[in-house]
Image (cartoon, rainbow, N blue to C red; front, side):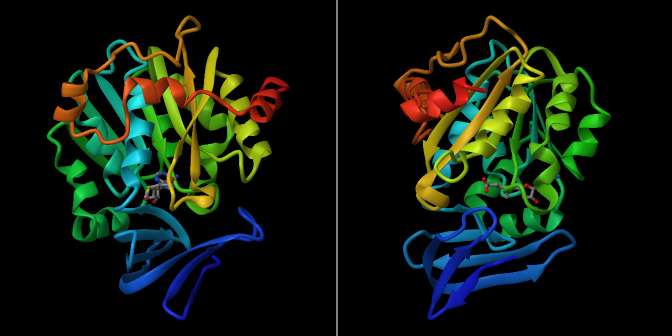
Length: 291
Ligand code: SAM
């Protein structure tokens, strides 16, 4: 783990994942720090980004900008499925994705598997606006490894959302090709997977490899992206795969009206944002097409 806390600033240093750059936040107070069985956990009150959750030195979310990520990783796949009744969330220990998935009117059951119960407990204590997702009567939370969980659940889910930390530590297996193979088996016919897929600004090869792994098991694959200022380069992508070869992921099947979006308290996602999220810069498009 590499991070720096000096002169009242937290800096996210990661020589392997983002060499030569660091995002820093001014600290008001370190609210909590501990080493769990799986990772180093810090909760920091920052001066301008609200409360921030840090795992193994990497920012997971801040209360100022988390909604962009949580809404997009949830609503991109949910609105691309005609009837997303049963959803699996892998990771997502802060509860933000569960909060968003629970809003969708067609979702009846949410299963979540998170490896580290301390992340869940600390989020309930210090990030209540995200951890409120755990209170949904639709949700069943399992503490365990997402990769292992997937091996024992076949043909069950309409949508699988992988809200993992970056590919270091316990999350490494969630970026590998055999994880896509397992997810495919866990889906019902026509199902969709959506995973945190990194940013092309940092490592286009890594994004390409993840897209490629998805392509080996799903006939329809796309990469969408959004802005999250507290993530490296202020940018993050999602790799989306669909078991139905005729599905157009760029056009939502379910288009929510402005009133419906307001009722669900969505601040970022809309049908226009959905389609725009799939538009890629030319150099990235060329790079992906050349796979
Ligand atoms: N939105 C965040 C991001 O992109 O950085 C991720 C948030 S969420 C806190 C990530 C969660 O994935 C963590 O709580 C971590 O414990 C969990 N996780 C990592 N590896 C896992 C695995 N193999 N199975 C289940 N959960 C895992």
